Each structure stands twice: as structure tokens, then as C-alpha cells.
Length: 269
Image 1 (cartoon, rainbow, N blue to C red):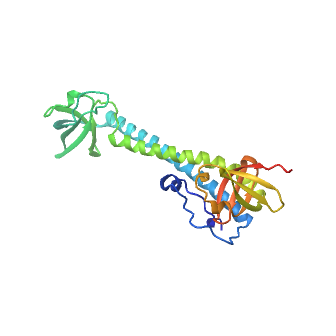
Image 2 (cartoon, rainbow, N blue to C red):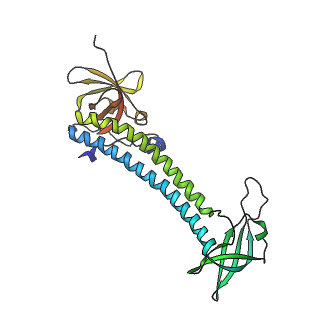
Image 3 (cartoon, rainbow, N blue to C red):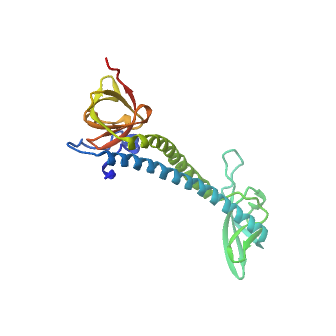
């Protein structure tokens, strides 16, 4: 099964500073179809990361649009009522880093009293016991806004957007890198794998020399981030190699673990 194939975790390398493979396995046999399905699985993972990134971006846009649309609808179609400022909070001098004050306003609709908190750049509203105009949804009187105020957006939306943007950037980067990396390698993997024996290259920590069964030799340079922590025992082990040049994939059967690589052939003398 392709699920038996492992790959070094970027999180493990970055956070823990070491691989998550454990001790090398011996006498592991991986057939060509299983190795190819492992490459396809990594490509699917990249595609799913891309879909998740688009979902994050879509949520930022949709939630922003809904909040603004809802505010505009309240201003245009909402019923009006007078409210009384009962508290003023976070009143600071207007500087580059200051925030707008928040006010707590009490109002009554149909005999029921509501107290809501609003953020406003309009300092004339930030006066305790003053009366200010509000608009509310007749179907939900607790849903209200300051009348005539431009859309500012709730404070929580800023953090919501920041978190989703960071997720979008992280997932998007992984999707682009992984999508390109494994899409160009899936075709060569389907074409077949060559079997050989890998050996560390003296003076090149991120490279292995592979002696194939037909007697030819290639030098494979492992690409980031897996080149950081492929242990020496894994490099000195049987391998399967698919593709050539910049489209090379190597599977260390002692993992078994897949890694992308770049190949340069050793000239025959």
C-alpha cells in the first residue's frame, strides 16, 4: 500500500530539528506501483493544501462582504431608535497606534431593553449619558448599529483575517511548491523505477551516489527540506529511482521514504 511510504516532515525538521523516521528498516520490498502511488499521494496532498488555501482566502472575502452588506442593510432598512451612552471605554489620544473608543449604549424596543457595545471614531458619541441615534433590525432588535456611521468592521474580524491569511500563505506556499515538485515527477514515476544501491558522497552532505543494477552511477542531490535530515543509514541503503535530471524521485526502501532530487550522471571513463 502507498500508505506504508513515509516522507520527512517539514514540521519535524523545523520544530524538532530532526527527522521522524526512527531506525532504518531492513529487507523491505517496495514494488513500482506502490512507489508510484506514493508520489501520487504527495501530489494529492499538495492539491488539498491548495484547496484549503483557497477556502481560507474565500472565507476572508465572504465574511468581509457579509459584514459590510449587513451593515449597509441596517443603515438603509433598519428601524430607528434613540439610545443612551452608559459607558465609554478605551478613550485614548489619537495617535498612530491608538484605537477608537468603545461605547456601551442602552436602548429599548417594544418594552425590552438592550445594551450593546460599539466602536466609533466619532468622538462626539463618546460622551457618557448623551443620546445618540441607532438603527436596528425589527426582526432582531438586538442587532443594531450607530445610525449614519460608515462601516468600520468589528475588531474580531481583524484577528480572524490575520489568522486565515497566515493559513492561506502557509498552505498556498506548500501547495505551489508541492504541486510543481510532484506533478513533474509523477509522469516519470509512472514510466518506471530503477533499482540500485545508495551511498553517501564524501564532502556533499545533501547528495548520494547510486550504483544501479545495470552498472551505471548517478549522483542525486536531495531537494529542500528533506535534504536537511536524511540520516546516513538511509543514504547507505537500497533505493528506487524514477526520472532524471530535475525530475528525479528517490525512494529509500529502508524507510520506506520518498524524496525529490536532482540527478547528475557520473561520466563513464
